[in-house]
Image (cartoon, helix red, strand yellow):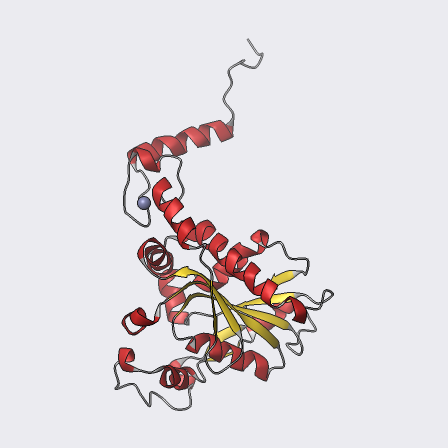
Length: 271
Ligand SMILES: [Zn+2]
C-alpha cells in the first residue's frame, strides 16, 4: 500500500506530545512558589495561582519623581512577595521563561509613562526605549542582560500611536576605566543615602560604541526621545546616571519605567 495513512501524525503533533511527556517526567517548577506536578502541566513559568497573584501585584502602578530631576518614573508593582521572587528568578536564576509575565507588567508601566508624556511626544519622531545595562561580568555569568531582553519583549505589547524602538545604547564603564576608584567603597552599601549612592554611580555608564549602529548609519542621540527601562527602581541612582549620560548627548529623556519599585522601608536591604 502506498497511500498515506489516514491517522498519520504530523511533526508538530509529535513535538507537542513529546513536550507533554517530558513535562510529566520533568515537570516545570513554578518560578515563584516552587510547586511542580499536575498544576504546572501546560503552564508557563508560573503556576496558575502565582500567575494571578503576579498579575494582581502589577496592577497598582506607582509614579514617583526621579530624585534630583523632574522626570516621572512609573513602576508596575512593589518589589515583594511573588513579584519580588519573579524578578529575582528572572535576573539571577536564569528563568528567562518569566519574560512574558514581566514584559506585560513593564508594558503597563510604559503605557502609563507614555500617557504622562503625551504632551511632549512628536508624532513623527520615534521613541527609543533605552534599557539600563548590566556589567559585562554579569552578562557573562547569566548568559543574558535582563533589562535589554525585557525591553525587546515589551515592544509587541505596546499600543502607542508613535513608533517605539529599542536603543540598547548604554554600557557600563569597566571598573578599571573609572576615574576615581571607590571613594566610598569602605562604607557598607546599605548605609548609603540617596545622594551618596548617586555620587557612587556617576561615571559608571557611557554610550557604548558597538550599539551606535542600532539607530542606523547616521545615528545621533541629538533630540532623540528616550524612555529609560529597568527591572527594579530602588533609589533611582542608575536611572539618574542613565539620564545624565543621555541628556549630555542631547537626547530628550522623558522618564523611566520599571517592573517593580522597592518601598522605602525595604530599600537599604535590597540594593
Ligand atoms: Zn506558584
